[in-house]
Length: 524
Image (cartoon, rainbow, N blue to C red; front, side, top):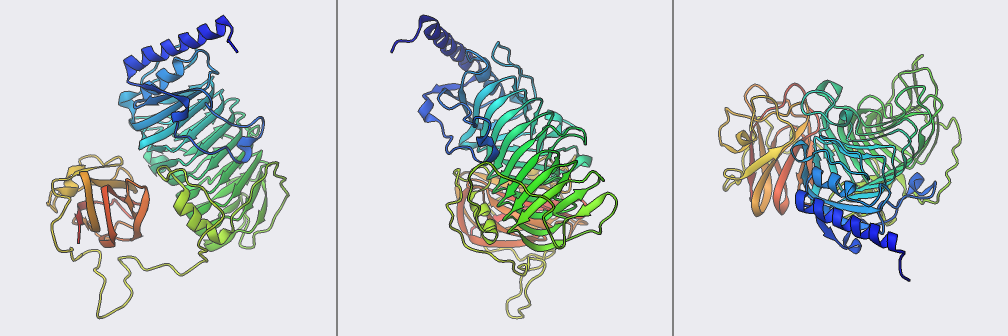
């Protein structure tokens, strides 16, 4: 069937507009079926008509923030569906304002304002929004998938999006955020705010298969006790790790949390207040404090609980502004869920989430099978070796390096924000008198090579005067996004031989200011 002339003309003009901005901003047009976005929305994002993002629209490849804005501005209308495939690092240096009738953008932030029917998905080698937040305002039917957003600040320099990794406000409807990694390098005193915030009448949102870590604030629904028009939010199969509070904070509305892994929630977790109702089921809470309740207010919230596992969870005493749900968690309301779902058993959550959550995991989801992992005693880390007089584990202040060549010498290095006066190059210069230090108490540093390199051990040497400051850590295969090892304290780290281009040492907690003099890598 032939299209009316006006519709065909609009489509042609839109294609020409996209071609023009492509030439200027380095975006690449491709067929709709080329998109890497997969799967369908789940949870509350399926309600209110559903969430399909840019399905059926033009597919555009973008390698800069300016190109993302240009793709939005090049559409025929602000509701024309579009799928934007993102590869590379998006930062302040490559994110400028672009003008057009189908967009309302700004420099220094990815602005999804007064638009609809958009998918942003990471492809290829991955998409990292470095110190740049994603702001959704007065918009609907948005999908964000397979991206990392890190170190977005509200104070200090540079700033973006009020310090939120992903923030939504003012009449937002139907957003699905899936397989993302949202992370900071500290709390409000270090300049960061929330990782996943909703306010001013935001509804029908799902956060799934994502990692939220190393932040003072996980996220909120409602900016104040009077902002209670938000809600209907689902959180499932996410990892909350090393979060102080707001995991999440609910003010009014309904939240559904199932199959999430909470580890090292330091002050408070799910904070239901101001009449909010939370359905909390089949989650795994580990090494955490006050994982559920009403905190820091006398405006009560409510919860329905079932099937959760509490593994080394501690509770504070009740008070006028403090109403923890434990230690004997009991329901205080009932919550009816309008969509179909089949939760995994709580003792499967650690296994399933470790294999599926976060960017760069191939958009894997739970298939209902897992290796059950009941609570166990923690495995001693490098600073707490299991006594064995015939085979001692090297201590953190005197590591015995593996044999062979230190592969870090001559390699590259990068990482999260660094403290003033320090350098990533000091990690691999062979000089114990120089060092790298993160901007806050946590952060990460990487050693990288131009070609694939086999590595089976790492030595982390702390600078003089800072020995013992590094607490919990994780060692990551940055190519695959998988955890090679984890533990506490600096020293020698051994793991199965792995071929990669980039290996990341992530400081999850510390005392004082951690300083790494050398980050050595070895094949044997």
